[in-house]
Length: 148
Length: 341
Image 1 (tube, rainbow over the protein chains, first blue to last red):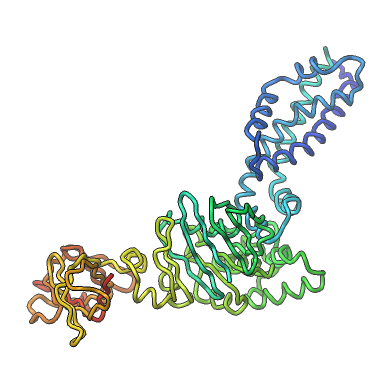
Image 2: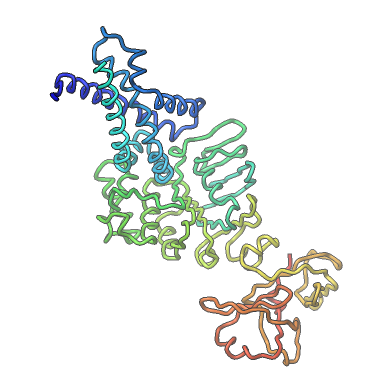
């Protein structure tokens, strides 16, 4: 069996771009859900869980048309990669926030600084693992979409 | 001057915090951590007002609620919160962000020196003992030049000691609120003591005075007076500076009770360490009570004897070795050691 390299390359590009996009949005969303009490917080988590349950194939089938460029596929992939990243990074963020967040805030740190100087250096492993799950999810399901 | 007046479902507190160390003492669930968190701004009380220095940082009526990072309130929590990926020096530098680089380095070096941490500056927190980690955390908290320092008791560890409080006193002259369960530390190092029970302040005042002369039964229990008996004032004699107190099982002679009347119901208390223990065959003196020994428990430097009727005494091991074969027991409750509430 020979691999269809252009398709593999396309799938990798879609999954890579989708994961990068989901990582940016997901970390911001995860941090927001962890540190702030706001109306719709639980609803956001519910929607994310719902997205987790919907296969990318269906998302792509609903949102994509053949005329759309591959970047549109990556946009759909962002939605697919977002739930594993947010839900995966939320728990370590919660624990780190509980352990170090209050101390850092009392030292006069902004949320931005806490995120970059404390959360990311201490929580990059589980975040990377969550990003890996997101990447594999998009890659696997995009490959099916591409094959259809 | 810091002042916290906090009201919520579980807290009803009015606590002035003048400059100096105020120890906050109370049983588990009394609201000690909740008080600290409300002052630091991590939880929002339902009502009340919190002043730190001259600034109102929380006011329930007007809706003022300053973010924790704007309160200038140093916080050292019950859990170790030194950043494990940074060295001791970097942890302190993290808190000194608002100064220029040279000034920052100078201040950090000064603080490390002051807290006797110069030998640990390139170490990670994981390599330090719990007591030194607490020391680093307090030093880091003070780097921000706060107006008040809040320190919670360490979970499961009694790592705060007199040396640390001495260093804090040398480095910081404003208000310190220190949660501790260590009575010895309160006595030796705190200027004031606040006693908390069920979310209420049941005692507040100069630490030594409050520990020697607690104002209420709850306060007495919290400062370690375990022998507490309801009594009725049977006689008052100001001329001889005496009073007679009738308890359920015995009658005691105490000092004259100013502000009380004959027939008043009061509570008499005495510390276990102040109770003197004698052999049963000795001629009874003032406030001698014949008792039956129920059990003996060993303490690090003493022996605790528990008698029938809920009376407890603490004596030295040597005294217990001499008296353990007593046929009967008598305890003496010295009038000067009695406290009446």
